[in-house]
Length: 218
Image 1 (cartoon, rainbow, N blue to C red):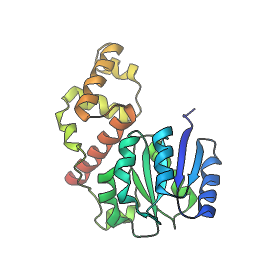
Image 2: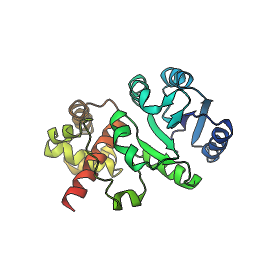
Image 3: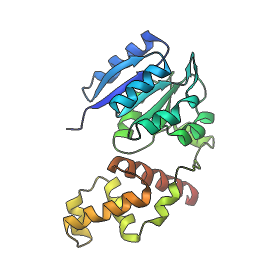
């Protein structure tokens, strides 16, 4: 059974936030810690609780999310930030990812699409509407260190590819004829090279790098 993710919602419409809360908690895999109507309130609870997921409106009375996203991400680096907007998210995707967002969600999309986006994040993948790709919104160039992946050795690349595919550490150890402890040692080196501290962060960075390469060489 997957871990229950803690969620913080930051928005300016209480009714909309309540509806989102009900959608998220219906399946039992997500628990909303609270709903907050200002950036200060949201930033405070994110810093205190370090939730797995933060759903935040792009527009708030105090200003747009660009003014606070970077600091919120720094205060809770393991949190995924998904920005909810009424605007065309294609133009916002690149700059928000640069600031630490994990995705953008249109308020006009369906509850099922929101849950699909979150499910992707739970297994280390970034999701976006296919029409954005068709209209040239991909690949994304980012300065967040995807070149770090190029520092990995061939063996480390193989290990990350298998981890992204969901293969267990024990099976990976058998495939490359090393001990289970050796896999842990490899992972420590991988985390340092990728400048990450968790398995989820490593998967996210490696998966994003792999997607970019597939687009470039397709």
